[in-house]
Length: 330
Image (cartoon, rainbow, N blue to C red):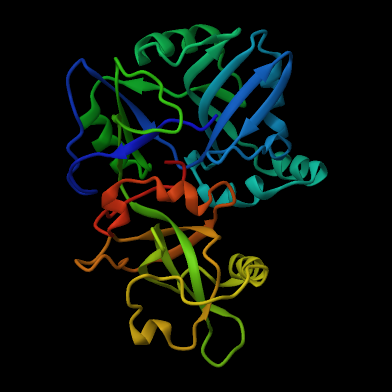
């Protein structure tokens, strides 16, 4: 099952228009990996947004299988460092396919599963129920443990937005209390208000580092019919192991013609090698220019849990380059 997605809310990262009133509930927007947790007949299965099975990568969550119910949860795996979520600590985890390596990583930096929705229980489909009923059932049946808990919810959305900004957290997600659960749909019943801009974008090409035959920068874009719209060149964040690992991945992608449907400026395309648009990466930035280019972009990690097809279903604002913010778990 693909999870329900939130639509970017009105306002900006500096002045969000978070809804108020009794018709809305608000949650912290965690900097984690979105996972659907399905427990059936005592077996646990964890899947990403793109329905990729990553159960083997999170052995510390195996105890969910013993809850005594068959259920389907929606939530995020979050790695906490000094009490704060760290997406960079999750990058290697979600890519792990070795059980031995997964146990080693879990021992060093275990994740916490923060559940925020209950969409199935003992064979019953709860998706037609309002959020308020699903939330109440979730709080009743999911006891907090060291490796999982129910993500807290708040009534004061604007106040939560200010508090999360002060604490350096990712942002806020606001949900209509009457909203049904719509698998795979990006709905205006759920609104997201991030504090910092991140984009899940597709690699369309790369350039070598000046004077060296190694990865120096990425040329990234957003999927549209016929290819990608150019969003910019990304050089920051590619040093060390992160850049070396990404270079290995790019080397496995077939080269081809330029995949961008709009004009790539000469200074950006000089010396570029074009690749088939299939790798999704996470890019942080200070928003976009009036021309839709990323401002001061930096590479955050490879998104093996997403495909270009997942991004193609984003809002029209994202597709035409006018949106300033996206995020990894969406």
